[in-house]
Length: 449
Image (cartoon, rainbow, N blue to C red; front, side, top):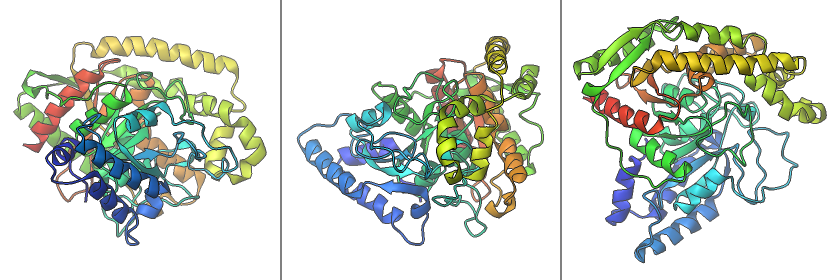
């Protein structure tokens, strides 16, 4: 069961209804539950340090020292980020002999400075290079929906999403290069936010594709994500003022993102749009043929393959046998891609961004299903690379739009209680992070009604 939203926890702490030590101990009880997913959701735990930090937070609060609303609240960190004194593993076995990190990654340091309690590092698709959340080295945490079947959690921030849905953390740090925050959030039925690329520092984070990489939060509400995002950005978190949906104009593309949807996804998406319309939002279907250009532009090699291979080439040569074979094969595909293909891809991306910006400028946001399907069973993916790649491509199709167009984007749950999780994704303008979060809070409230 998820923990309370962050602002509610902050109020409970402020009013003395709970303590940081109690919240942190509760998280570890759930993480260490042998019947739970903690052993697969987390790669490394910092239990002693976290409990000491929680005790210190409670003592500081007793003296009126509360550095931020997140103070004393337990969070998880994706296993890509440097944690001082520990080797960053990136969900792999290939980095185990590397020296410990000398410093926390800036995003981790900012969480600590805000008073957050760091519980541990969460499981990921190896080197964050996959949309499904499968990891042969550390196991795969099961999606909280339909655990009896055993469904994929989504990736690459798989453990981050499960840590939040199962109440093992109040919020999580994830990364998003092609949707790796929004995909697991959408599959698991929580909220996930991808900021505009470059707004949040990625220093001290193992890269996948620096052109696209971003750091974003996963949480139980838009307000939760906004609080953590502000801390990532070095800003003081404030409660969002939800943007009334009756003042919003939301575009729905006719191209690409609404094609080949599961019936459950199509139904939930249409119901969500109907609820927003009933609440006063203006829903406009638009031609957005520029979206159909994304796949052809990337046909010669994607940025994660090209830029990823540049980082991995020596490691593949030395320890390629320790990689997940599918991940190794994907990175190696970058070896034969000529420089002119990379340069043309970057130029094509810049041109497409400019034209796409012009298409969506009249609208407050672009709405689409976060994912084309509900989380499939882990067993259905099979063991062949072709099955893995087909499922991977279908999963990241919609979320990758926001990364390639350098937009901020957020997913909020829009399914009926008890049914398979479905996310509604809102994509904002480049640099329009604050406006998008405000609108998303309004949309969240309208959907709840």
